[in-house]
Image 1 (cartoon, rainbow, N blue to C red):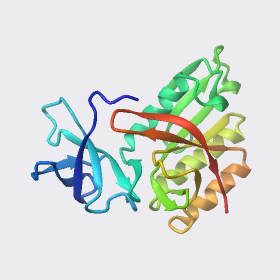
Image 2: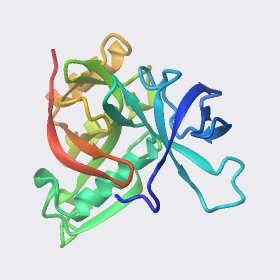
Image 3: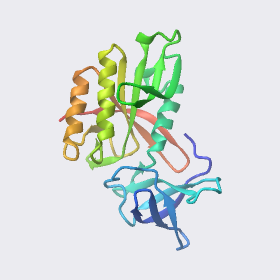
Image 4: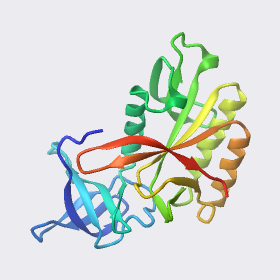
Length: 239
């Protein structure tokens, strides 16, 4: 995924009200960015950190600048824009980057399904559109690094994430293929695990989903100022 223009650099002053962040620009002036992340952003919002932002051409936006990335641990980049995760996975699917998800004829997004009023991120069907060959794919963005190459999801309690696991298990029980893909926008992570210390209920449900036949995989990204690419498969661990 190439950005329309290379991202611009700034220094984070603070994140506040969930969707706003103040930064200092290179000339010493300050401005406010839109923060497209509903999570806690644990370890990803330290004041003084280098950040990168994009600029929208939509003049009607109150905050036309969008916070995209942050540097953590002095050298790793993290893509904090959670809205990028689905676009990265969609691009990878269309380019046959993920071997385990190749061979489907049609890709649809935000399809209503399940018994709890959910929308699946992607519904993959074979060329003949046979119901039994469909794959329900849910994407989660991972930004929480724990050090030593470890990353975890979620970064805060997620009732929505629990609902999605229940829906995936129900799809698997009905004979459909169900997949949970962790899109890891953090260059310092090579292994993903459930964040049991933050949301033990989610960790328990994730393990239950695996036992029920839901496939869990993780893919990492190359992250830069000009583009982000879903590139390599990572390990998933259940300690």
